[in-house]
Image 1 (cartoon, rainbow, N blue to C red):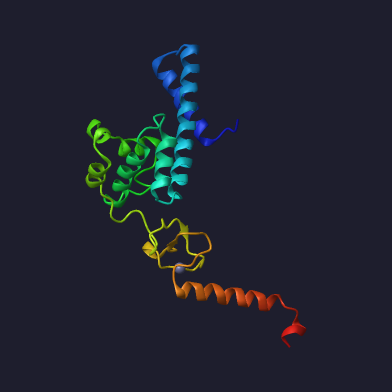
Image 2: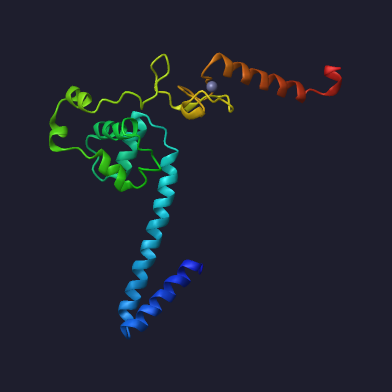
Length: 195
Ligand SMILES: [Zn+2]
């Protein structure tokens, strides 16, 4: 195991506490060390989870999968995903920022007893999501980034979302990609071919 500054700080804290309270039994000290190590591992796990969350593209299927992964209960995943989407789309909670732990995902997607028993139409009306699921003009879920790496037509000047990998969001982006490919082809040609 790597001895980090954190470990040293913990050990120091522990020995100070022990000195302050008189001799702590060997058994208690060992138990405390185990608890602290578990806390540390949990914190690392949460950080990794938050950064993985930040890369989830918000689509109904992706959110349903996310809720399913955070929960031992696999019922009503689509409804729970819709409720989570409402907190993302309407309340502005971001995956990886405000929503950062499996507990956050579970909390924001938990259904009340009424919500479990109402019809799909009633549920959809109660948790209507207007903006969060991006769709292309043809109505497909927009889940992939525009093929133009410099595209800034998406929200917050990020890459716009398209239905399939390799699609472009606009004529302009299509032309940019075409120009890049043409340049790449030309520079790959030997000098005598262009001379
Ligand atoms: Zn684009």
